[in-house]
Length: 261
Image (cartoon, rainbow, N blue to C red; front, side, top):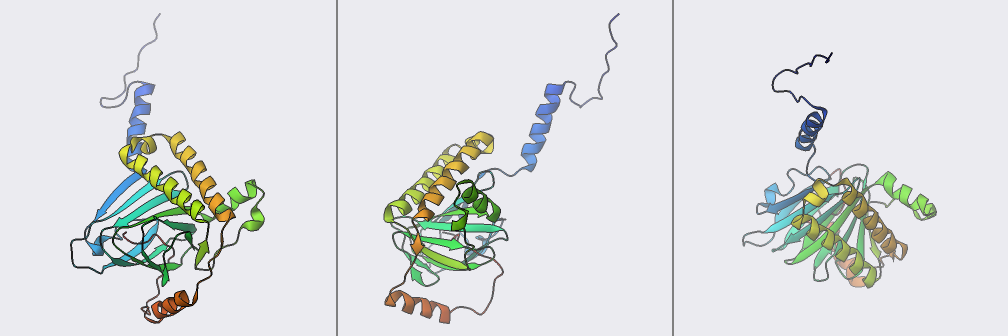
């Protein structure tokens, strides 16, 4: 004798596969997309809606601003690309528990905490420290955000734990031009792919995991050859001038995600 069928209430999934699809739809509506493109035309709105960083932007030219921020979330890591068509000044910092690494495009000009941006410069920001950027027109930068414990774990797995040192505020490192170009180029290619094919990252965990592994390898390869940046006399004078003109306001966050660049 056939078993009696039990009908679910109307409007509810009547099969397990349909229920799973229903759950996936609900989850996708809650989880933010992995790829987000933000076009910025109003400096006052540049810092709105970002959970990973805090940022204030001041436009230094009167023409219409066309800045862009692209955010690509991997697993625990996040990569950001900033660009701007006008000269801007920013105060940028990351949230608690994150380390930030910033590398610059080959044509980027400007400064970070009064030091000129140049080939091979890598900026490292401790959690809850603030960086002050001046970004000229044509600026491009790549910012990598990683949880503090992830950096320790990756170095420990490679038996390089002795190399880990928590940065003191904002630090500038000098890497080879080749390594800096490779790190920036890798980040830019990833962002370009994410913008063209966001579904690769929004819907496929394996793509995010693979990209994060490559990102960490590229970053650690650059850090392995990094030395503390030694400013020359002109750099020290510019940095002192920038420090003396700094607003007394203190902001409780860190890191260089540059500009609404």
